[in-house]
Length: 105
Image 1: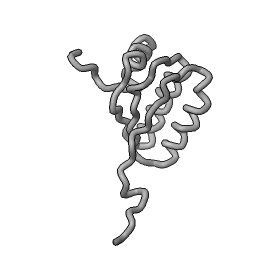
Image 2: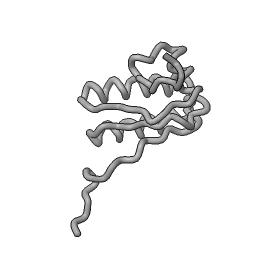
Image 3: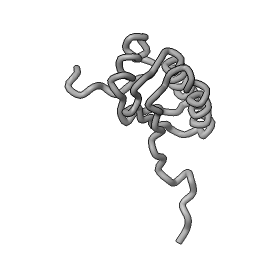
Image 4: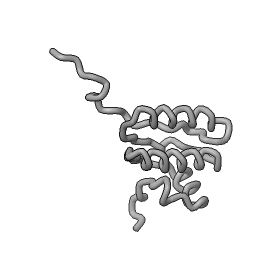
């Protein structure tokens, strides 16, 4: 039986940490840069994000912009209320494109 290459394997969503404040920004940046370097579509999971600040949101916005510029899609499996609020407060909806909240039009 032939082994599947890493390109054939379905990638698990990239789960974001619960604490995405400025202290976590360097690690988040490294993770996002590795995802860009892989040159494949990226699926993010923001369901466990409990705390987020402007530094992390700026990184997510820049990542989304750079991924799209490279022709890579960025999708979300989910986003916590904290993440949703942070994106909305900073007006980053069009860049980060979180999934719509259930029951919200």
